[in-house]
Length: 175
Length: 378
Image 1 (tube, rainbow over the protein chains, first blue to last red):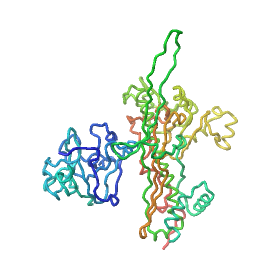
Image 2: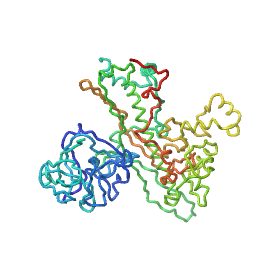
Image 3: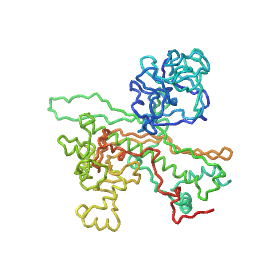
């Protein structure tokens, strides 16, 4: 079980080659740090299929193990950042294009979502689903295996046991 | 290609219009290409004069790497009449505080190869550099409009019992049995007379509308000091008759336009940015001391680089703005439809700023080949 802290998502490779995108939230209240389901860094987002140019969580936050089947992007903004709150439109940065490697605390290594697997091995593929950490839900990483309908977003490069409780994965935009 | 070294481009960017050299250069540009649209400096800086701040003026967050500036708000106090033996009530002093958060406004990242620049006779990179400053200020204005709109709608909600549906403000509800309270938003006289269905048509600005707007602020121990309107709505003032303006101003206006800096004693600011401040929306403000703050942490910075034959440049600034006293802004709507969060007439997109992507739509149709006469070269 991971533990959510102030900083939950840290790139471990040069960020300059990565193209960061920034999109307003369909639900701007998710940027409010007092919201019970506010966004934290390391959660995953998708572009809203209906509202052009805005983004939503990659899976339904209220349904545990809800899988993301479209292409999601990792959120790179800590909870309650004032540069997000200072703008009229609550837009937040995501890793949009390019390859990356990062440490994250927003994962559940033990849960097995539909057709998936626990995270147990280096180079194992991971996907995105709604998970529970502590007392609330997040949209984070879970293990993937053949047959799982979730979109593969990366592969494990360090397991939490060898990385201070953080999961390290590499991945990036493939198309 | 020696003429566009990164150093020279930087120098050109730093050349300001208020220098003779800068003006000469801008004049040179003006003769070299056709302009697509007018560009204007920000109106928010006229309503909330910007203040430069440094890192030492700001407060850091312990949770993440961002900065805010904390603003003190005037504490409450009062006096009382008492007898010789009486005693006044006490007040343990406490002043409210508010935070202004900083964020970045950036231009696009512009890129062009050295070779392709040879295909232009106009100094395209310099023009973009100059325009980038105005583009950044456009976004300042867009942010500001969202903030003031949020302020007036918040007070409007409070005045209507904090029930959102009670805030539907259109001609239909105004002429209904239980009309909403027009506390911080008021409809124009012509807009409120429109019959069902409510629409997005902007009615002409009437003299009485301005007076009613002033009274929304003046009735709360504040004073309306400034107006903000679009150029389109300002044009309606030219329609005012001799009964509105008197024969002297009427005859002047016919010949020279309305040439005064004040409208019924208050300065006004007009803008051509009708994709940000949409026509039909007129705002009144108090003096900045009662209103809010606009801080500039980093004035416009410019980055330019050339790697091999690829030239890259970008401009950005770091600012913070906020409406601290939301009672210091009021709004006049010259259309009959609802522009509250209810969006009761599903016409809200006509009244709010356009998306950043859509700002500054291109006027010319040169890319579609629409110039006259059309010439085909082989």
